[in-house]
Length: 382
Image (tube, rainbow, N blue to C red):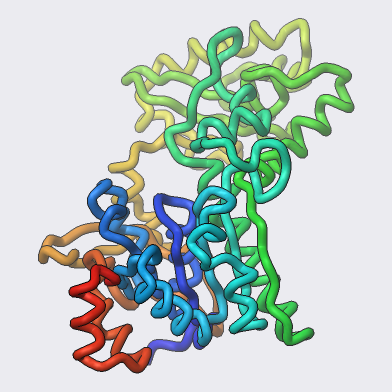
C-alpha cells in the first residue's frame, strides 16, 4: 500500500506557467500535495504546456479575466493552503488574485510569487529569462572558456535552482511557521537572488587570493590539472575532480608521474601538468579510461550524454529514471524523485495529464452543478 507523502492534505493552486513554478509544484505534488494547475487556453496555444512537469497534478482551465472565472478561483482559494504564481510583478494585482485579495478570505494562505528580479527593487518590471538572471547575478561571467564569450548552460540553472527550489523551500518554511502561528504569509522568490547565493565560493576565493574570479581560471574551474576536463581518443570527455592531494596522488602514481604529486597547485608548473594530462587522456577512449580508473579513488567520471543517463544503472538503482504511458498511449521515460524519505516517501501516482483534463471534476467538487458548469463553458470562463 502506498504511504502518504509528507505533504498529504496540503492543497495547492498553481497559476504559474513555463518552467520555474510548474517544477516547484511538481516537487510538492510528488510528496503528496493536492495540486491543481490552473491553466488558460492561450497558454496551451503558445505551446508552453511542458507535459513532463505535470505528473501527480490535476489540471483545469480557467479564465481569470472573466467574472465567472474569478469567482471560481476565489471559491477554490478559500480552501487552499498554497497559491503559486510566476507572472511579472503586478500582474496578479491587475487580475485581482494577488496575496492581499486572497488573504481577506483565507488568512492562512501561503502565497508564493516567483519572478526574475523580485517584487521590489529597480528591476522588478524588467523582462528576462534564465540567461539574463545568470548574467545579472554574476554567474554567467564565470562559465565558459578563458578569454572567450561566456557559455550559456544547456539547462535552466536560474529557473530551477534559483526559482523552483527556493520557492519549494520558502513554501515549506511558511507551512512550518503556520503550524506555530496559525498565520499564512507571502513568499517573494527572485530567481536572480537565488543565483547570487551561488557566489559563496567564488567570493571566498576572491577574498583569499586577492583577485576577481574569471572563467576557467580558479581552483574549481580549469586553472589546475587536478580539477579539469579532458578530451579522450574518441572525442568524448572525462571530468577530473581530484581536489584533495590524496586523490591527486592516486592519479599521479597510476600515470607514473610521482613528481607531480607535490606540484598539484604549483603556479609555475600548472600549464605543464595540464598539457601532460591532455596528452595522456587522448591515448585511450572514454570507455577505456573509465575501466582503467574504476578501481582508483580519485574523483574521476565520464561526461555522460542524456541518452546515457536514461540507461545508466546508477539512476535505475536510484529510481531516478522511470517508464510510464503518456496520454496518447506511448511508452515514455521520465525522471524520478530526488528527495528520498524513509517514512513519507514521495511517489509518482499519476502520469502527466492533458490540458484542462480535470476542469469538470474540480468544479463539481467545488459545489457547482452541471447547469452552472455548462454556463461557465458557454461564457468562456473555463
